[in-house]
Amino acid sequence: MSTLATTVNGLKFKNPFVIGSGPPGTNSKVINRAFKEGWGGVIAKTISLDCSKVVNVGPRYAKLHSADGKEVIGWENIELISDRRFEIWLDEFKQIKDAHPDGMLIASIMEEYNKDAWCEIVGRCQEVGVDAYELNFSCPHGLPERKMGAAMGQDPSILEEVCSWVMAEAKIPVWAKMTPNVTHIEDPTAASLRAGCDGVSAINTIRSVMGVNLETLRPEPTVEGYTTPGGYSSKAVKPIALRMVMEIASLIRKDFPGRTLSGLGGVETGKDAAQFILLGSDTVQVCTGVMKFGYGMVSQLCEELLEFMESKGFETLDDFRGLSLPYFTTHAELVRMQTARKAAEAAAKETMVRNDAEWDGDNFVKQSNDLSR
Ligand SMILES: Cc1cc2nc3c(=O)[nH]c(=O)nc-3n(C[C@H](O)[C@H](O)[C@H](O)COP(=O)(O)O)c2cc1C
Image (cartoon, rainbow, N blue to C red; front, top):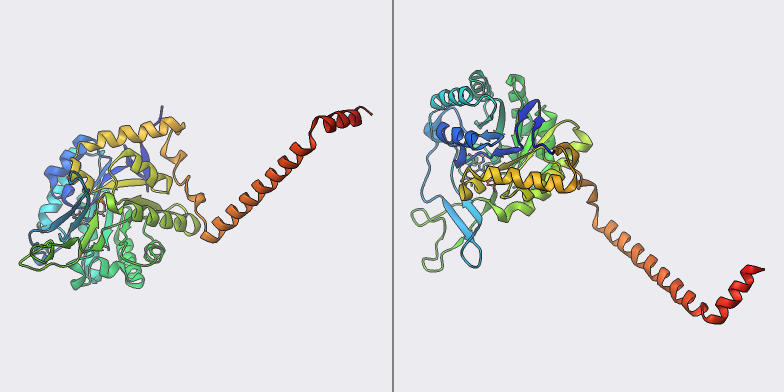
């Protein structure tokens, strides 16, 4: 009988499915709902000490539909972090943990480049009993003007410094959330792991422009006639997320054994999750998927992942985590292997043709005679 239960950085998840930071974790009401539906963990919407600087606009979403218009395959947002007061969040974190002690509640936090602010937010959230932190170094819009989010996550030296402030203060596990808007995701990953973070999450949204309205000629989402590049998520980003998860998992195995990876980007099914785990994820997050399908989708995620495990004879997630990682190599090596295989096949074919020609009746009789001698 297979099980989805897993322990990551000492945290006991009843299944690897974690709600990714965003609208599905925007207050205690919806987080409690998520735990009731059976999610292994929830990462709350990102918070900071002073919400007065957070001013959202509308509309802040734009969607890419499939050709038949029935399915949302890509989602752009220009939403900022939570605009709810920090003290309200602290009360709600405590109330959620009281109601769901077995649900893994992770606070997503973000601050400016200021040691005191980071130390304060870390100290105050852990006092109310959250299980872990995710550091948001990855929001691609709005906050970089304040040197927050992706602006910090794209600079490995600042990232390493900030992570070391957090690690000096944190008494619970810390995951650093990576932005995909870099050339080599291994660089910020290594910086945060060098500073002592217990794990990383990847990916946040991909900086994007959803499109231009051909009637109005304005780019979307249009706010007062203008827009700003936003963050792309949902099914369309899964191949990019998987590539980055593979790169991070390979780095962790080589240089940081024991550290963990929470993979996300476009996960909608248990089969998607199986692929993230095969490429080295310890947990799998879903954000836009929950906005599309609702909190109840977790039962189908669990069912499909278990079905996959049973079909392959895997009893635990450890049995197949990272199993597909060894099958990546360079293009030059693919050429070498394919050329070698074709040459071997051609040689085998030639031998067969030669044998066929030689094995006529006479030869066969002669050979038999030879053998009998
Ligand atoms: C509307 C929206 C708001 C988001 N807000 C946050 C946030 O506050 N903090 C954060 O770390 N990530 C945020 N994200 C990013 C998601 O957590 C996730 O990294 C990304 O969307 C890719 O995963 P997905 O395809 O499952 O959504 C947000 C995503 C969306 C769509």
